[in-house]
Length: 295
Image 1: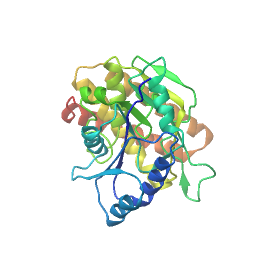
Image 2: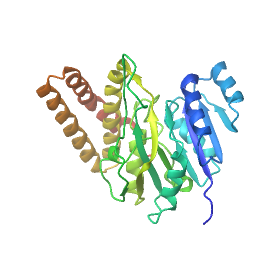
Image 3: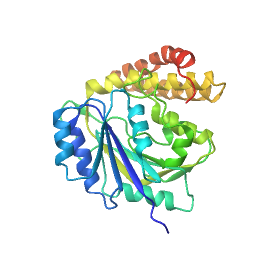
Image 4: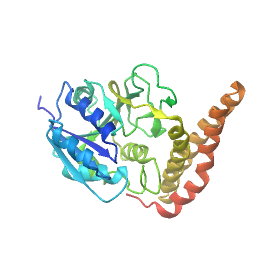
């Protein structure tokens, strides 16, 4: 079997300490990447020093365009691998992450993309810190029709065939962290892959860890995550795609269930968080309907 050439893209934005941990994890992979691409939207001397001293062969790019989607698209434009894997600068993959991704592509399912689990770091969180943006399932599952895209994976643990990503136009640059759409770029491309007839394998063996986050950051993301869902839903409806309503309704039901569960248990922080997420849907739906064109 021909060995798949593999590129890894890591967007970063002024977080050299987090990036160091991520790169250390990439250096420990049992299956070494063929290309490492770091795209920096907020270059700092500490980051440049880190790149030079890492001992890894890193292709380092600085760019003025802000947004994780823009960074991933720059990486896509220079990727030489048949597969482009992405993670975030505040994630650190298990040593077998890349091998598990490759095994997924080499499996009989021959998917167009592979995602996987996102877990918290080992051990208990430090005081004032908490887990964020997890995908805890370790069950391998193939997706070949449109479902709620957040069930399929997220950008911190994602890989796809480079030619497929280029054919689809890459990530939507009006969505995602740093863009006006705030979030949702990863589930947008997952939904677009499935809508195009592609298959996506969620591999329980492909594991990354998402660094502990402050509780203040978690509260802040409740608005941005909800905003991304509304923006994606509005964008789909602008295209005449009724799946936008289904995504919006499914997310709303999920947040309402969590709100009611929190209220029954007296978990008022959870109640406030879900109210915040639901409150973001209205303005973001309008944003998606009026601003976010098809990619």
